[in-house]
Image (cartoon, rainbow, N blue to C red):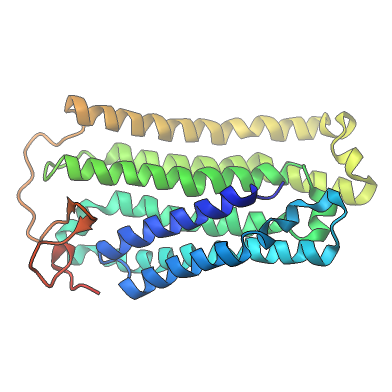
Length: 301
């Protein structure tokens, strides 16, 4: 089905609140925008959480109008996170203005990737299978794992990896990293995920949708249709994206192990940063106490 009922909506709120807090404390988004995004996401969950699950009720005789309401509320869940992600991306492009932002560029990129896949995976591909007419023809076809893969790893997988790198950056202090494995991990996981979808899952799903509209859902799911040679080729093409993705995860594992053994650090200690660097306090990322500036000397918003 489209989205997991209430758990999916709750995790959307969690992801929005977590990123809004981090972006606001790092000075990447204005505090009032971060607060508004969290309130909007929470309100959508509390007000539209139950209606947002109505698109799951297709085979229980639910009227089309009720399922349409569910599809709309489900699609609205992604908007707050997309907006704060866009603002953070725009601000992060000015990272050279502050020394600390350059040191935190990879966690920030992972967080911006969360916002991107939230729009594409949870939003675009989620809404593609949620409206009543789409459910009639596309329920349970390969269009569903397109949404599942891009929304699950693209949002929550990248969010967890970004948080891991953020904590690792705090724990290692001012020691300079050899960051090329992180770059391989970021682009490998993102490009690998995109290739899984573009080369295999999405073409098969669209072919099944066409077969469902022409002959019926039974035919789109039948062995007669799915075992055609060209569809088997599309299934094998997924190994391209899988291989790139595995390479990205292996690079990240190599880097994290290197933080423990020492090979992920530069040989010479890095010079002290010219700007103030954020540090981890009781409330999370906080600036220097008693200052009117945020991390890196950026004015608080």
